[in-house]
Image (cartoon, rainbow, N blue to C red; front, side):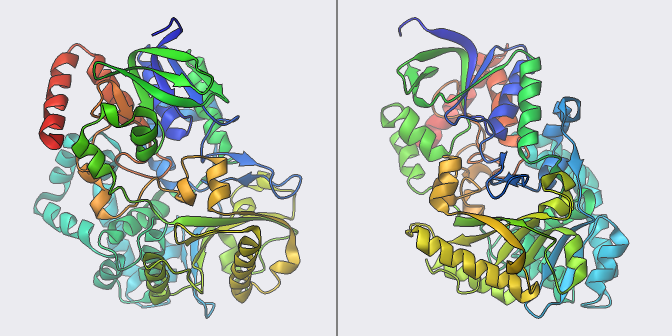
Amino acid sequence: MPDSETVDAVVIGSGPNGLVAANVLADAGWEVLVLEAQDQPGGAVRTAQITAPGFRNDLCSAFSPLGAASPVLADLALAEHGLRWRHAPAVLAHVLPDDRHVLLSRDLDRTAESVSTFAPGDGAAWRTEYARWQRVRDSLLASITRPFPPLRGAAGLTRALGPDLLRLARMVTLTARRLGTERFAGQGARLLLAGNAMHTDLGPDNAGSGIFGWLLTMLGQDVGYPVPEGGAGCLTDALVRRLSSRGGRLTCGRRVVDVLVANGKAVGVRDSGGELVRARRAVLADVPAPTLYQDLVGADHLPARFLSDLESFTWDNATIKVDWALSGPVPWTAAEVGTAGTVHLGADLDGLAGANNDLACGRLPRDPFLLLGQMTTADPSRSPAGTESVWAYTHVPRGQTWTADRLRRRADRIEQTIERNAPGFRDRIIARAISGPAELQEHNESLVEGAINAGTSAIHQQLFFRPVPGLGRADTPVDRLFLASASAHPGGGVHGAPGANAARAALARDGVAGPAYHAVISAAHRLLYR
């Protein structure tokens, strides 16, 4: 390899996972260089003025319940580097086509009262459910965010639940519809579970959707759906400042095109200009799994069985997002909806199932289910006083062509859906910006065809099936190369776990027990992919 810059670790990509990984390694005293292809860091966690002057719009990620609760981000103490969380008065509202709505609030009494309007006993059932969450909260979050297998978290769950651990295991398999039916009598609480499950690519009748809906709903009750003050990009800024304070470096506008492999070990990277960076200890990649293995590493360095498994990697659905600058708040018919930061609208439970089935069949849903964010309601710094910065997104089938005209027509349909529950919405539009699958991928190349979760959340691609059947860890078949993106366990969301897990794996490989660690991981890979 020609002489070039040498560091302990190269991190490819400056999304939140890449920056978390870099911070964890810098904390261990490693010399770390993060290389980012775009001209700004952050990946999907960026903010810009794309509608009208004075309106700050999050380009993708916005609300961060997992970020607020993440033990990984808590360990980084980002408040010391400028991160401030802001909350809307209410967490979330799900609005039915007939204008009824259910409200999720950090105030337990308020949520219980709201779900009780759909069924009198559901307020007490909600309190019971939240008590169940509090019983397992810390151990469950540790199990989700720490390296697989989560021995410490599992031990905590066993102590907390005893024989009820088996019932939790059953719950993990349930559909959101089934879980809601078993726990609640009315549509309100059931919609909170099913609507939150739709933050993934899972509909209410998909196995495993119940646990995703339950997790996000309970987090909303617990920590809310906060936003970084000033924009999602301020979370990125805090991570970058923290990295810099520990001697780590970030270079933007430098695209990595090859991971260099010698004798089965990652030894560095090559950028698009042909320059090399040596890595003494590790290369970590915050890019989608297919990008890393098929484009940056290449088939010559990977087992044939592994590559065959990768052909079955499943992306999540494509996405269309619209940002608006409004002259005033959204004019909801139900005024209480205006207090929520996040709003679900466009469908009841069967409507959610129908939209999800359309997507599974490659059909564009006639009536889009919308996830909408009222950003100024959550953080007044997002737009001038008296105005509102708003976005909404909906999923569409992958593989379709979206011309500018077709995107405009879909955006119009989205606005019609909002108008149904907020007449006069369109009269308040100052400007809008439409991002189809191609535009989202242009903002962040990891959002392949507008897939915002780096791969499906379905159970066939979770835990030790993510991104392919394997160990469920960041270690790859190439020694000292680690997958640090949301394509790795535990998947999407701004919680930093894949990045932290990759960094911990790199530290383990380079530690005193590194040779033994490598021997075990390599033997397991040979067994899996021979």
